Amino acid sequence: MTPQEQTRRTVVITGASGGIGRACAVAFAARGDRLALIARGRAGLEAAVGEAEQAGAATVIAIEADTADPQAVEAAAARAEEELGPIDVWVNDAFASVFAPFTEITADEFRRVTEVTYLGYVYGTSAALRRMLPRDHGVIVQVGSAIAYRGIPLQSAYSGAKHAIQGWHEALRCELLATGTQVRTTMVQMPAVNTPQFDWVRSRLPERAQPVPPIYQPEVAARAVLFAADHPRRREYWVGASTVATLVANAVAPGLLDRYLARTGFASQQDGQRRSAGDPDNLFEPVDAGADFGAHGRFDDRAIARSIQQQAAHVLGALPDRARSVVGRLGTGLRRPGAGFVSRLRGAPTAFLRYAGWVEHTPRLGARAAPTRHTRYI
Image (cartoon, rainbow, N blue to C red; front, side, top):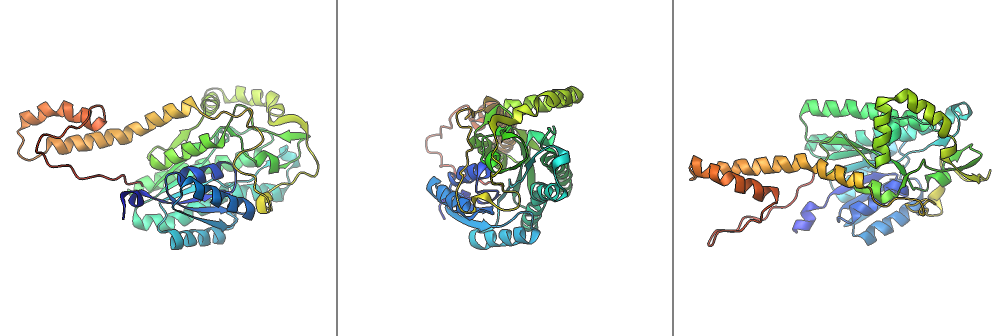
């Protein structure tokens, strides 16, 4: 087996036919991973498979399943392992929503949003843990939202589901830490993203729905998910300056934010163009069963392709792993047989700089080459 084959992972992504899930499929594919893509829409899934294969995925399979059905999710996990091997990473992204005042949302609609957006994550995580825990290996990434902390008007069902994910994720993370397992779960809180959901979400608004600006491209979200899968020890990641500002403001002055959103939240979620009464929605049936919508919505002209905040967060997020590596390797060097205590201390600064990546390692003449090390992802 080649070094590249050894570092390839088996990754399962729900909601993979469009939006963030679709962008995540391409991002993991570019690493050469093996992918199991789960969604309800056949046409969207087939297009996602083709895009992932073109991006470089080792193997891609499409699984039509409704994540609100626990038996279907379990069957999808079993098929993924049967065809691709043990699951290394599970990404929960599938969701549903209704844009309407709470008093205009029916009980069936509210239940459906909750079952897909919250319980779908629960079912996916349960299926993943049944396989990961016995192996003591694996990562689960929950795709969240700033709405997990800050509910907004016209999205009460979705806000409630995202809040539920946040509380459940915290409880689960504590349980995993208590057992000492190497299996990790982390959450990525997203900003407004340019996805097709705003063209197929069920809506009772007079105008077409839109994300609250600023709007980010789905590739920004995908890079965050990929990074979280590589660095899962952190409990959560915030993506975009708008997410940081929202969550900080909510922590400092939530009542003031209530009043601000009461004044601005209705208009900011509509684009000024009248909505057609015949627009399709994907609440109970997939819109992309017969046509592919891709990863992007209709806001490309306004969407932000890069986030400075995200880049800074990734640098900081990688520091703990880098520090553990440096300390571990430095300790090994200081314990090297045959070296006196004083000489080992003299070599410590150079060893630290070398292992931190700040100086090049230059072998001594005649020294044996160090064995090649390959990255191991968990």
